[in-house]
Image (cartoon, rainbow over all chains, first blue to last red; front, side, top):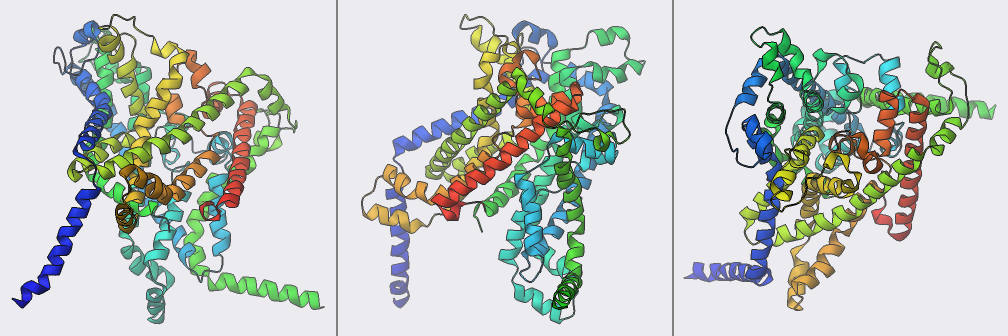
Length: 319
Length: 317
């Protein structure tokens, strides 16, 4: 009996809360309109991707007759079959993309954390200088030409793997400042102090205490770098002439401009004669190349985006 | 004598400060080196905009003779200078104003959608294009706009009895196409940020408004918008400072670098790239690049100053 009287107010509060929510929610009519709108917008977001998938699985003749359509008029895997002749080239492209993404993201995360951590320490005496040193790069930059000269004429990174990793992408000032804010807000100085009293050195404190406590922000920073490296084609465009260092995005770029790029390899393949090359299903091969290149990011998306949203949310609530 | 000791003391204390912070300074070394090479060295490199480039010279970027503002005079005499400035500023101005309007609207509507699972679903789908590279977006655009096979010509215009449009040759359509693509690709990102801000608003405000009988519209105007205003201001401020920096991928990949579209697709970034790597005109491209950086810098400072005057909290620095 007594227990029910204790529970009653809580239950009442619960009821009033849901009731309040219902009062404050939009009317069923508006709800329907809003949902209809977002369903249409979602279709608009997915439509071009579905169109490319469908085109890549279409017969070339059907496309030349009817154009790209959302459901193939005549199904065919000829485009993928054709791409398989160039499997070697595509796999090398994947390899370069994966390697630069892993190396670049790892190095970027480490450098970001190492730069951000001292900035978060109130007792670091050069905090002001180094904060300004990185902040200034956000408001003034030299531009493409001097950067190009530094990397190509002074450091001679043209046509090396480093040109895909270092220019522009390695450390983002914005992510450094976000990481600093996270350190400031989550790691209490007294933890560091007690570690110091126990005799831990700065590096030990950083790798042993600060980094393990900062996995959420590190994951977000890592995702941003991964996306940046995986989607990069600009460094290839500017610094790469060597066909052996073509990453996946740049390969897609070159196939879009000129299908010949893939054919250079096929020509040396005796299984594919000159006639075979003459009747390449060029439109469908283009679209198949897009799917091959786009594949990983779309497949990884459902896992990726949850953390991404969480990370953005942390960043948006300004500290 | 006294000056000497002052100096000695200062040097001594600076040395001590370095020694005391040596491990933290060591941690910053990789990042500092990177910033020096990637950001600061190119800042000094802007000086080549004032040089007459002579590539036959040894270390020509250092030893070429100075010519003052001749590269700039040459640049601003061309009709390109006006076209690229107009395109860059107008597109970016449109993006800066339209993004918060659409994204805030989307965020408010998503927040109000009764079915939470559906709202999450819409948000995830809307966010997907943000993950695609500019190259992929170029392909997707091509599948819609290709003259002979594109979806719009073959499945929309043709059934309606209209003539096919040569999208990649007609500059007049691109002031509509590019903003559409920009919104399609980026709006999910901004929506997530604004949605996070809206969810962070204290529920008590809405409860109080409800007591006073405020309508949904009234609540949006009087609570939601004022509460998220700081974030809108900050994001717009950062964008205004970069109004001369265009999204290179959007303007280069989506029009497939089609020369006949330059009147409406060429922006400072694509111009600098082409002048440098296609034409090899280093003098002109570095002048254009410095013009972009310098105006951007002045703009950031100016906008920040204005914001500081209006509302100190919202200023960047």
